[in-house]
Length: 347
Image (cartoon, rainbow, N blue to C red; front, side):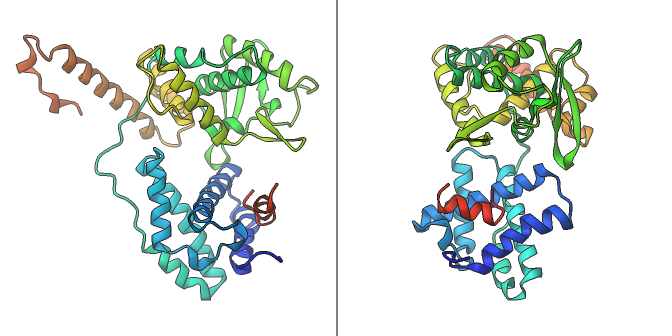
């Protein structure tokens, strides 16, 4: 394509998404989305560092120093080491494909492999919000406006379902079923589907939202539930859009509730929902099914986190009390860029 400096790079990007992931390995839409987001984020970082448009990026620009800078920037934005490693693994997968399809590009794969995965010295502590914090955040959107109605409903649905943000923005109108027992169908990792019940309060907000954003849409519509309108066209909402307004509402909510964390992000709602279910006595097996965990062991982090939470509370309560000396804490522990993205599978 004219205008693209490194045609080999973008041809391989195109085939990776349009042929290899979709047809040859039959990856799920959510998996492909994750790979696309990782590569897009890397390219955006290179663009910013080099002050160039997407079309001018070449293989040579993405060396170990550029990749390390990109990964470090993720942590600076608040991403966990686990997220950093996931992004690196997806980028490595692309370069592994590149080396197979274009032998002369092996040198680029070798450069990427010089960047190691980062070791997690100790298990990540599960972050979650208190019920008061959840209520404070949900009162921040201005529900006299369409945007406020949308934002509040999205956060309510995210909390009610415990969905991953990719699962949520992938919901279509037909996935929500009303009736005696309202439910929503979610498509998770590995293209696995699960059905989650919805609370009455959530359905009331859905109906209010649908009257505004899906006024002429039938209940069997294939349209995305959450969308943004650009240039007269409706496109699925990007998770960055949700992340941005959640952070804004979180900062606003801190003024009335000091328990609201500094970084309110989409995945925090999932952890919060799981913790609240566990604290209210819901069995971990049911929570595991609710969240769509492939392994039950994954869900055990919430039991461990709750124990740690209780340990800390006991420490604080007895810090200066008669039991202080008896406590043993160790017992619990469409621009040109947009066109290129569309042509080469990055969008």
